[in-house]
Amino acid sequence: MATRQHPGLHPLAQGAYAWLAPTGNWGWSNAGLIVDEEESLLVDTLYDLELTGEMLRKMRVAEPATHSIGTLVNTHANGDHCHGNELVTGANIIASAASALEMGELTPEAMAAIMESTREPGPLSDYFQHCFGQFRFDGIRFTPPTRTFNGALDLKIGDKQVHLLEVGPAHTKGDVLVHSPADRVVFTGDILFIDSTPLMWEGPAANWIKACLLIEAMDVDFIVPGHGPITDKHGVAQVRQYLQYVHDQARTRYDAGMSAFEAAKDIELTEYSAWSDPERIAVNVDSLYREFSGDQARTNLLELMGQMATLAGFDTTDPI
Image (cartoon, rainbow, N blue to C red; front, side, top):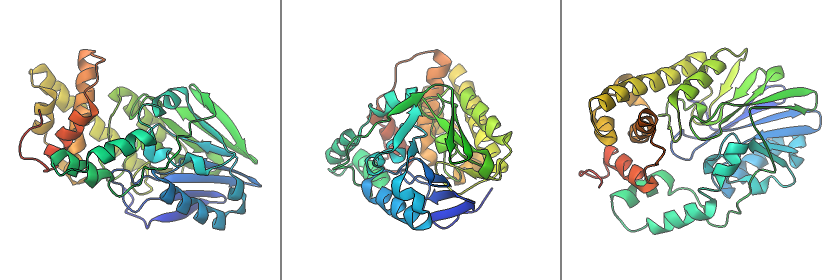
């Protein structure tokens, strides 16, 4: 697996770049840029306007074509990959149809309201501030996609072919890979968390594992994850193995009659405990239990955040 690279803009090939966050933790996401001739495609924006603005300024210095980005692809619906959309003025914003619908479930305004409501000290509030307190959600205008697709979509940026491949539901409801064969690069969004614990809001696990296998089969030199350093196929395999391990461990405990949170506390993370944010096991097991039971009822977000706060040591008592 690749080691941590410095944050900022990384040239990958002629006219292809990765934007790397300083860390792979909550909200600190990566992005990408594909340029050819006078055309450019941006892969994802960042969690707030300040971060997105800084990224766009650095891209414009590196590539004059990014003064007017014609295409923006949001790999999925999480705000740390789309909250900065409004700054990419005039762009055709593309996402899967499932992602476009999901973006309306937790808008920037809703996130700002949650952060305001969690300012009073307490385990859950402290955990929210720990995860998201460094970002500014106020003043962001919700800017959804202008074009959607299902399955796959082929684009042309200058003379470069760019393939959009929908591999969700997995991390979220409509995850998309962005593959530029000419640049030998794939931008994976949050199908890949490298050196950081994957987070399965949606599932099923089999879809996510299949997406990892698809990436492993690609003829690429550069694999840019949604969080963490640029990686290789060994890094992809480690994510796939984590997902299979947690699936199998959760299944054993589900069959034994343990609750989802009891199972999350009981599973030994072995070598994966060194990855950041290991408390996300609570969300992953909760999603797997929904998969095993066929129950479509979702656990309340605040309850899941409370479980993660407990596992992360922000509370010594189990959440109700």
